[in-house]
Structures are given as structure tokens and as C-alpha cells.
Length: 280
Image (cartoon, rainbow, N blue to C red):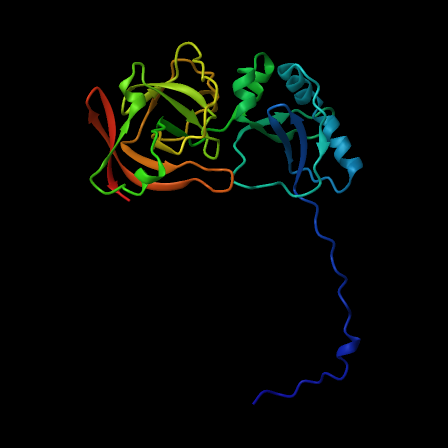
């Protein structure tokens, strides 16, 4: 049996005061551009209030001035006191940057998040900013075809069937390279000299005016993460090695997420290629 415990004096025990929630270890600022919202994260420098955030932003002036010169506009940075939106739909490029401290101040470690559309519209930064920003490699999606498959044909998909890729019947065979979670009309135009590799054109190719939302896409994947300069379209002529597996996707709509439909591989088909369906 357990020994009796005297609880008659429990109300005399000291009450521990509730501790205030610690300030986030990262301070975030946001600025709106015509291509979307940019975010600046300052790591290891919590800002418990607006005054501290303003002082921290002042220390970032060398980086902010360089960004203004690149964008040809003065950004209006605002302290984002709330938690960051980590929704996967954010298709953002990421770059690290260290800002040297002045006097006795320690260097600041910062992280920029920028919309891919901004990078593609502006081109690569030049001058000190080109070496100051250390871009992260990212996974990518290579869209090799957006075949005109209607809803009736989708219901007829079966193992052993094939989906013809009309874009492959034309030379050069054009596709799109984009980040995950970007839209069907986003990304940079690429050429596909073969079914196992893609390349950025030597001269920027016109994407053309967006048409109707495609119903489906056939996608391949690069063999590994790609440098941001490739995904942004800055590395003209760069070659991308592709994995052999192909996948068929239902494109996202206004009220529905994208959906995986089938897997398989590409095989020659007349003057072009088709996707052989091996799994549904």
C-alpha cells in the first residue's frame, strides 16, 4: 500500500508565475512587389516589439539598398509580427545572405524568400549582390506535354494504354520548367532534344499568351535539385538530366488541387513520343 500523503497544506505551496511566450528566434519582414510578396528573415535576432524590429531593419540597410537597385524600386519593408505562412502553395526562391556587423555589432544571418516570377522578370543580379546572395538548390518539375485529354478520355485510362504527346511531334520540342506548386502557365520555356534531357534555350524563348487552363500534364523529374539560376532561366544553354519515370497529372483548378493520375515511361511514337501507362 502507498503511504498516506499529507495534503492539508497544499494551498501553501508557492505558485509559479506563468512565463511569457518567448519571442520568435527569427524576425521576419515583408515587402509587396508587382510579382508577389518578398520576405526577409533575420535569424537568431528576435524582435520583441516594433522598436527593436525597426533597429534590426536599419542594420539590414546594405542588403536592402542593393535589392532596391536590382528591382529599380524602393521596397516598403514591414515588420511581420505574426507567424510565417508555411503553406506549401508558396512557390518561392530562397537565398542566404550575411550582413557584416558595424563596430561591435555581430554579423546578421538573413534569408530572403522571393517569388520565382520576380527572378524571371528581372534577370540575374549584378555587382556585389550577385556574390552576396547564396541561392538554395531546389526540386523542380519538367512539363513535357499538356495533352488535350477531355473528361471522357480520362475515364478510359488503363494500364497498357498510351498518351500521345503532341508537343513532341514538333521541332524543337518545347516544355516548361518550374518549381513545385507553381501554376500550369508558370515557369520557363525549355527545349527537349531527347526524352532523357532538357535544356534552357541559348536565347530566351517566348512563352506565348496563356490559353485555357490545361486539363492534364505529363511530367518528368530532374535527377536532383537544380540551381536557382537554372529554374529562374538565367543559365542559358544549361542541360538538365531527367529521370526515366513519367507521370500524368490532373491540373489544379479554381476549387480543386492537382491530382496524380498515372505513372509510366516515355517511348517513341511515330515522329514523336507517347507515355506508356504502367500504373493507375
